[in-house]
Length: 313
Image 1: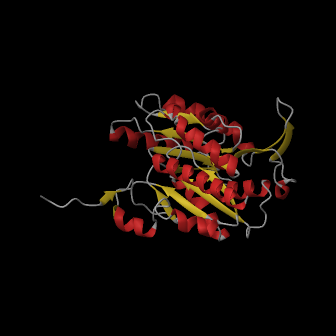
Image 2 (image 1 turned 90 degrees about the horizontal axis):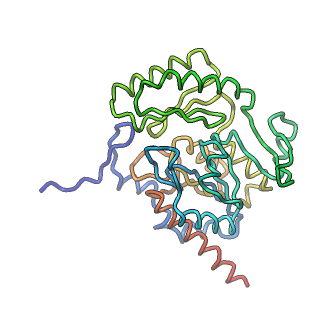
Image 3 (image 1 turned 135 degrees about the horizontal axis):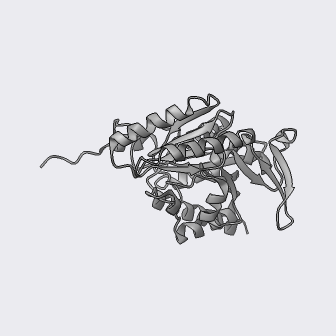
C-alpha cells in the first residue's frame, strides 16, 4: 500500500505539504497558552471574517448560516472583548446572519462601517456622516466609496442581464462591491465564458478592479481602502490610538483578509490567524482548520478571560 501523503492542492493548483505549512503557521489552539501569555496585560480586540470563518462556505451564499453554538460563542467573546465582524458582504446582510447587537459590523470589505462615535482622524472627511438611528442612538456611518454607488448599481444591472445564460452563476449586490459567484457553475467552459464576460463588461470602468476569491470574482472601486484600513479605523473609533497597549486578533480565511494580517504585522502587536485546511501563501502567524476550530478557539478565549478576571478578584 502506498503511504498517505499529507500534500494537498491549493485553490491555484499548487502542491504544498500541509504538515510543513503548519510548521510555519501552527495551530493557535495547540499553542493557546503561549499565545495568551504574549497577550496578557494588553487590550485584546477581536476581528472576525464571516464566510468560511464563522460559517461554512456553501453553494448558496444566501444560506451561509452560522450555527447557534457559534452565535453564542461570538456573543460571549463580545462581552469579554471589543469585537468586530469584517466581511465582504453588505453590512445589513451580515447582521441578518449574526443578529448580535454587542458587536461592530464592517461590510463591503470595510467600505461600510457604522460606529457610535466615528473616528477623530476622519472627522473632516465627507465620507463620515453623523446621524441618529430609528431608536434615537447617535451613529456615524463611514463610506469611503460613496460616490461609486450609482455606477455600481449600473454594473449590477448589466451583469445580471448578461450572465443569465450561465447556469449556476449568481450576482450578489454587496452595496459598495459586487460579487460574481460561480461555485455552482458545473461546466468549466462556462466559467471561462463568465470570466471573459465580466472582464469585458468592466473594461469601460477603469476606476474598478476585479479580484479572485473562493469560486468568486469580486468587483470593487479603486479606493485606498481595504480590510486592513477598516481594522485601523475601528481601532481608532474604540480609542486604541496607542498601539503599545492594543492586541488585535484577526481571524479570516480569504485573500482579502491578508490586508488585515499585514496591518497587524506592521503594528507589531497581535496575531493574524488564517482559517484554512490547505497550505497557502499567507501573512498569518497562526492557523485554524475550519469554522469548528474557530468555535473551539472562541470558547477557549472566553474561558481564558473569565479565569483571568476570577484571579484578579
